[in-house]
Image (cartoon, rainbow, N blue to C red; front, side):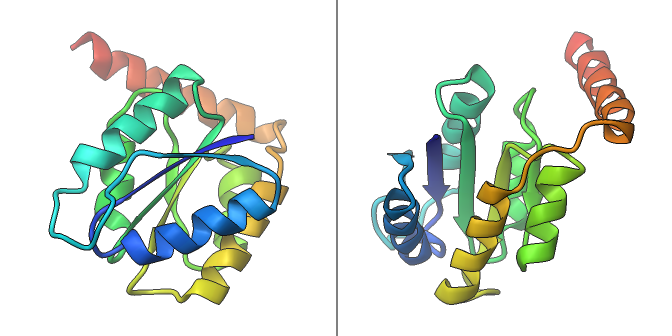
Length: 150
């Protein structure tokens, strides 16, 4: 799979570690930045990563910041993106199985590298269950379309 990565300065170090981890799992990585710990504004990097996921240029995306909240909010502004903030393996697995999350946001100041690797591994291994969840995702898409039309 092709995995988009993006972070702000707070998430930069963990992003670099997770990129190596994801490559070691056999996936392709596309890094949208940032490329240092110099202070930046997360939307400048997260939105292009989310757009790449929405366009199908990347299959999934992982965004990182201090808490992951701002990154998830920015990613979720892009139509077609479902980004979940995850802080342990269960939330990651459920984000994929029940919500078909195509992106996750992680807080580098919330979880360490070992737990982050477990979260990413669980999320990548999980598959959308469909069934009763299809109805809910259809409602999310309808809301997205309603507000896209203005």
